Amino acid sequence: MNHKNPEFVFLGLSFNPANILMLFVTCLIVFLIAFLSTRNLKVKPTGMQNFMEWVMDFVKGIIKNNMDWKTGGRFHVLGITLIMFVFVANMLGLPFAVIWDDYLWWKSPTADPVITLTLASMVVALTHYYGVKQLGAKGYFKTYLQPMPFLAPLKVIEEFANTLTLGLRLYGNIFAGEILIGLLATLGAGSAFGLVGALIPALAWQGFSVFIGAIQAFIFVMLTMVYMAHKVNTDH
Amino acid sequence: MLGNTFILLSANGGGFLSALNGRLNLGDIIVTVLFFSILMILLKKFAWGPLMGIMDQRAELISNEIEAAEKSRLESHKLLEEQRALLKEARDNAQSIVENAKKQGETQREELIAAARAEVNRMKESATLEIATEKEKAVAAVREEFVSLSILAASKVLGKEISEEDNRALIEETIVKAGEGR
Image 1 (cartoon, rainbow over the protein chains, first blue to last red):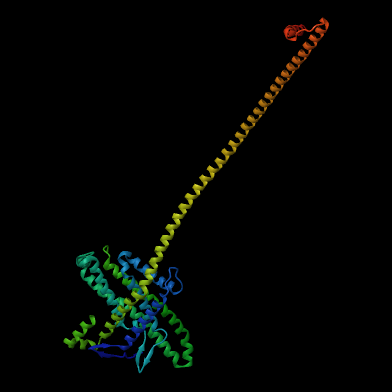
Image 2: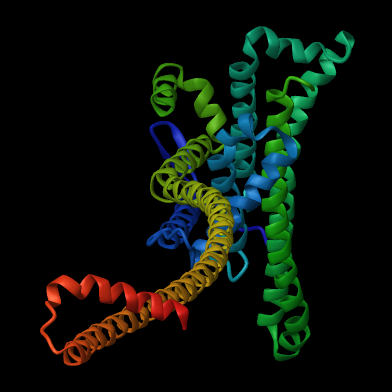
């Protein structure tokens, strides 16, 4: 299970080409799904347009649960893109993993903590940005003193904890799923007896992983909007 | 811009970054953010934007339709009331016309009967008058004849010619007296 990650250094920065490849594939798939299903838009929707509208309404519902639509509307695009991106990323590692010369090339990009933590940091950074934008610098710093000034250190810690849990929850779930799928695949590939033994659990776990991937995408967007609401709303 | 900053950082104080590179894929972080941002911008331009537009358009269309339906409902209600009023008016009109015609017919009948009656009376009167005149005339003729006969008889009796002109008045008087005497 200890596959090495490919690596190269460019301009003094180290890159993992497997991550870049998988991110690109994810972006491509998300873009193609969204682009192809929004050709031929009609006022009376048909086919894939219905699906995309459902996704939009779903994210809209998540945002509306957390904040006023007037302030939350601007996060709609972020929310839809995020949920599609995370979901597709979670799904990519399920059907197979490609290992070349002991290097892991095909996997879920979200099975890498660097990527999930980057996404989490990006989201948290955005919450701070919109917090300052919405409340002004004074109002933004005031939120650290509420409800009690002596809780301010805890509030600061909370920001880091939020980032870590948001990123690591996603990473942990997807990585664990891939580990188990990998183990079952190894078992199945070992012998005919192993194949029979691994078939049912592998199918079950793959189905469960699809479920987990969807749930994690939902949770990621949900928590994004919760954190956003904490920073943006005045009544918190 | 972010990428440039990192490149600048790595060019100037490479020590810290190269130490970090061994443990952390800084490049991956940049690529993740970059890819995600590009994806979001592209999707906003090509997918979410048009989709949101069409959804707004639909919402507007539906609200317009509802408004129009409400309006046409009110209008048809108004028209119905109008038609009902018109129908009622027409019915009243018809009723009055029939009544008028009936009344007029009645009067006309009366008039006709009266006229007929008057005509009959008039004819009767004129007939009576005519009969009277004729009778008078006949009487006068008979009387004249009688006078002539009387004169003739008298002249025969007297044996001489009586001047009709001289005695007519006398005879006529006599006859009138005789007539009255009868």
